[in-house]
Image (cartoon, rainbow over all chains, first blue to last red; front, top):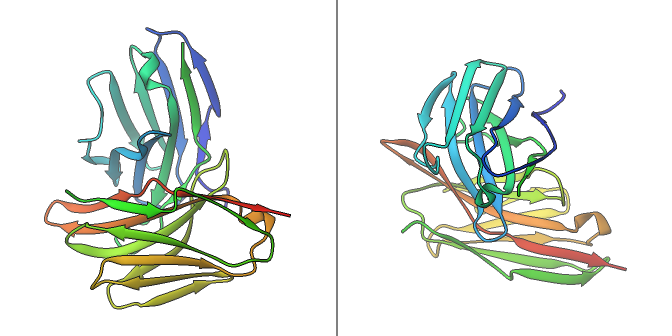
Length: 115
Length: 114
């Protein structure tokens, strides 16, 4: 089991550029989550999918953020245009559909720096 | 407002000693409580999940307790090791008509020294 795989591990970009973060969940997991972590606010849910369908996107900061899950093995989080305040570590996590009592398995994150 | 508060914010202990981390929550309705360990530069890893009816749950040298009446949980680490140095995050799950929701604490940063 390779775990949740995220890429890239680090991303440095200039303000105004488009950024795309990628995630491959654990095979067989039906729920996928995108989180953002900062020192000030800790872990914040951005969006989660069940069976590739977005269920709760209330945490997506604004229209500059978008997420897709075209199939069960791949998801992207896009920021366009990026701003310095978007600098954070972005985590993807996956779980069995009934994550009510199942643990979330996190990837090792993408550290985004927007200058 | 649903909140999860952890204490202390940070803690330094000597290798081999025990320690206890605290978590208080006001999340309602309560479904379960989770503890995660996050090493520097890595994603959080699940340690335990406890439901309303569980008072205690162990995972190796980690023992979590839950008092659903007072809305408090603790994570006890026995015979600490250098590898226990990490952030420990308390997470409470609610289950409403709108679905599952996880509320995260901001973590306790533990450092184990020689």
